[in-house]
Structures are given as C-alpha cells and as structure tokens.
Image 1: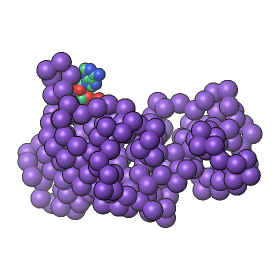
Image 2: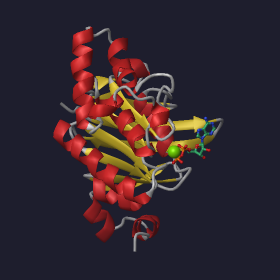
Image 3: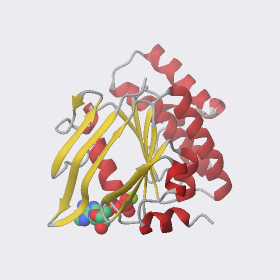
Image 4: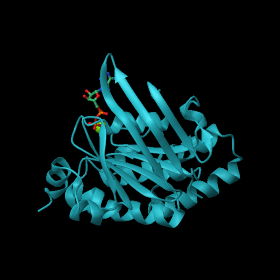
Length: 239
Ligand code: ADP
Ligand code: MG
C-alpha cells in the first residue's frame, strides 16, 4: 500500500537564509525513515515541503513516479500528524476521524465502517462520542493518528508527534505507531530530535544539521560508523 517518496536536491531559503540545503533521499515504499537533528536543523521545513504546505526554492519531490512538486497539499493524498496539529475541539472523536472521509464525499455507511476500523486500530473503540477535551494526551494523539490513517494514505508524515507526552506513554506510542506502520505497509517520514526514538523506530535515519543531511543510514551503521563528528556526537548522546 505504501508509495516511495523521492526528495531530489531540495533547497529552501527564507530571505537568503538556507533552511534546507540540497536534501536528497529516496524513501522506499513501506520504509520508515526518520529525519533526526537538533532544533533548527531544517526537519520541519523539509517535511512541510513533502506535505505540500511549503514550496521548495529548488529541487523536486516525487511520490511513486509522480512529480508532485507543484501539486497542492490536499491533492497529495498524504496523512499527517503533528505535535500541535490539534483535533477539532467542537467535534467528537468520531467526527474528527470522519472528517477526511466527509471531505472525500464517501457514503455514510462507508464512513461509519471505516471510522470504526480506525478506532479499533488505535484501541479507542468505546470513545467515539467523546470530545477531545475529555481525553488524555495519549488518547488525543491516537485520535490524530486514526484521522491520518483513515483514508489509507500511501504516505504518512509525522512531526514530533509524541513530543508533548511523558516518557512512559511516549515509549508505548512509539511501539504502537511502529506496529501500525508495519502492518499497514505505509511509507513513513518521521521527524524527531530524539536519537533514541529515531534509532528504535526507523529502518533508516537521515541525520540533519544546519539544513543538511549529514548521513543517511540504518540505525546500526549510524551508531557504529558515524560519518562525521557531529553525527557521532548527536547519535552517541544516548549513552
Ligand atoms: P527544525 O524543525 O529542525 O527545528 P525548522 O525546519 O523549523 O527546524 O527551521 C529551520 C530553520 O529555518 C530555523 O533556523 C528556522 O528559524 C528557519 N525558518 C523556518 N521557517 C521559517 C520561516 N517561515 N521564515 C524564516 N525562517 C524560517
Ligand atoms: Mg520542527
């Protein structure tokens, strides 16, 4: 079900400042790739360009074989979860998850069965009629994940989705997100500044610093053969 995502020599400047410099990576269909780096390294800017909310200054973005560089966000068919991408506060859990399906004008019976499945997937079967404010932080984040997955996107983008949660819940959700990603076969681009999170969840990690991808490798290689002092230092922080 996943589709590949190709980022080809993508640059983004804001008034002469290069926030992303020549980012290049091909993420395979069904792969889990993390963008890992300190605050300000260009992770969110790059993810926003993949999402279609920001236009690259130069370079190309492909989903599958299609060049989507000029395709608007709502036509890219990508699911997204952000730390601060709040749920609609006036809508129930059910309505929040149904929203992307209503936008796509699915039939009511189809919407009900899909939302039911999505609620099962994130283990919130009985909470469909609650409002977001009546949920814990972890449950709210699960609803956000269900809403991103409900239309079965081939690609899922997450920007620090667990940043607001405490450590125990974060570890639980890491495991759940990884399981969901694998069982659905969706291609994941996952942003985090937490090296432990990136190393445990990812097939490959792209380490970013000052807008550049310094190294792209699987977790073992990153840890054993860091390609630069920065990578060694940043990845090595876990012990
Ligand atoms: P990260 O997500 O890794 O913390 P960002 O992608 O948010 O980093 O930001 C990378 C750099 O680009 C930062 O220096 C940030 O201040 C700058 N930046 C991001 N968005 C804008 C913008 N809209 N205008 C000007 N500078 C920006
Ligand atoms: Mg960011």
